[in-house]
Image 1 (cartoon, rainbow, N blue to C red):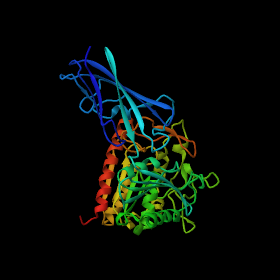
Image 2: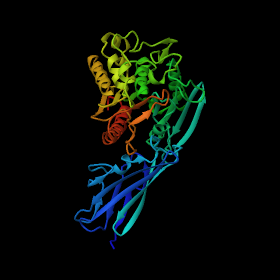
Image 3: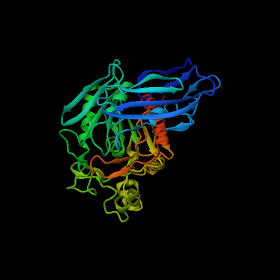
Image 4: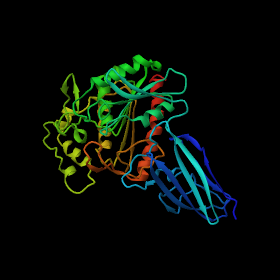
Length: 432
């Protein structure tokens, strides 16, 4: 019998911390199988497996060795996590029911004569992070307060066309020292179930409330948005430039869009998403000579929404009318995009934004992280990235977000690491 040992280090840490998974005490060349199992979303088991051969020292180390077969390929320290598949088809929820709860993964090493077990614990919220419901001044959100003494820099987090509150991202930001406000603007209690005719003044109220109530460190309040939220944070920063200290735009739009998949059926998907002073903001589908939904609507599911968006971008006059005046922003910007985005062309959009800013000699930092062959769903590291097909939470349309599990995992890691460094620089200011 071998005297093998399976270790995971660190055992318990934040979700964005990579782990060292090793099996030692093996015979050189010995074959083993590693399995992972995680109960996610409250009741669905996600799992993966990979086969390895021990090196000459009798060690299998996932940070140095690639599997010879299994759920993923290549040297990937956390490949057993991001390559997990759910037992229940169509399941997409990868976090615990509460963001304050940990996600626990069982790692097993099957060797010829024994099975070794270890535990890997991932947390969104560090010890001492507080979660507070916000229901005042018409605002609907959740605030996460760091465990460390304040004052803290702040960030307001806005979801995309799925609506609701992005508590997972807010909890992780708070774990890294940010006063994090996940603000809902539709599809949440007390709010419209649809994105149509959302007043931008609502978000200005959120920024004002955050500053007045918590006095962030050095008055720093960043905006973080994904997808429609990525479009939204750029739009807000261009309209309220003095209120925004930095912009984090996940898979953003460079132009204003209509209600699309999150629209009120009574308004229609070509109706406005955003209002300012009670008036619709011009969007790219309005009076567009080339736009058609046919590439998205026709054919079998899953559909690619980006194909319809690309038809709208062929009308340069409509693009000019609807483009976000990003040159009006008075803060550093980071753009996170992917070249196989199935929802809309975030890589092209980011290039358009960068070009416009260069044409206007933009005075602030512009950071762009574009991941080849990755898709629309950029979250943060070390969560499963295998589920690419989904039913839209508002329209129900079955679509693909694009990418592959391995490129999406790379995108998650690259993007989050870049964001953390970007926000650190943004707080220092341009003179340091």
